[in-house]
Length: 173
Image 1 (cartoon, helix red, strand yellow):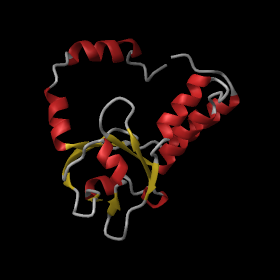
Image 2 (tube, rainbow, N blue to C red):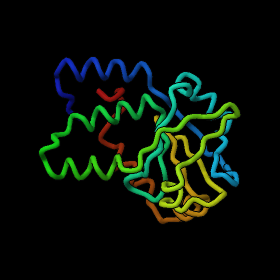
Image 3 (tube, rainbow, N blue to C red):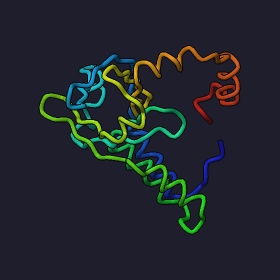
Image 4 (cartoon, rainbow, N blue to C red):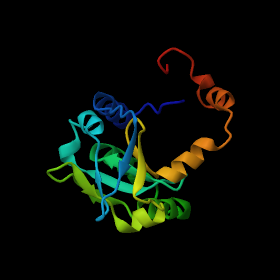
């Protein structure tokens, strides 16, 4: 990975590293009759420093699931989008499709959040859902879609080598 040597990138990177989340875990949850999700206490603890800033929920770009971004991560993602030239048609099409449906959310006093109906419908979420801590964000899957995805035949050894093999063991340098 070649890193541009400009001041903006270095200062942004330094700020980002100091606030990085490391959301971990797999959680079975249920939506209540009103479409609210109780965020598991283990995730709330991991989000303690950012939970008061809120979240943004959006569609995933690769799979039929939703992504819950803590607000600082959504803002970092938005900064990347703002760097795209909006006079390039592909860029505008991506921005339009990526941000369509993005919805700000907050936890209520009991740790629940109301999931946007349109997004729930798009991801075909039923009452039984699976939350996955994905480092800086949380994926929200229907329990069935997640089980189906887990059953897909993937050669994890080859995938790991293709994706991570060139990184080495020197802390990314």
